[in-house]
Length: 115
Image (cartoon, rainbow, N blue to C red; front, top):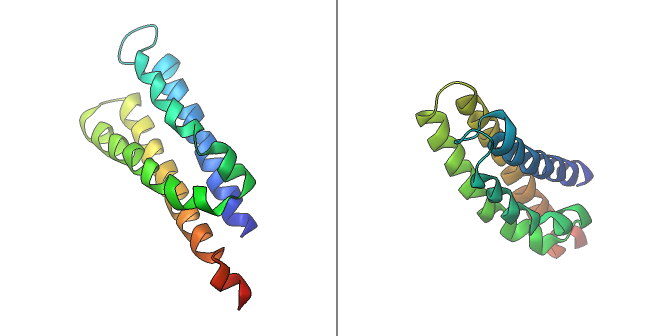
């Protein structure tokens, strides 16, 4: 359980930093940074619940991450150069978070812990 929580927390935090660095410094759409950096804001909503191990957050946060997975797949396919590589990292981080959160929610169910 602790491993799943650590994986989910680390991948979520890494995804937040990736989104910010990607759109502000590494490969922004416009030189000097773009307002797409605001895409990192929704990732802050589940952050405290994930860090504290709240099962309810682990149940709904994977649905939020699917948007980042989708963006990563689209941009990995359509962008070139560094931006395509960053999109691939976004896909990887979103997949790691998705499965860690899903399995944490499944294994922390009251019926699983009682038996």
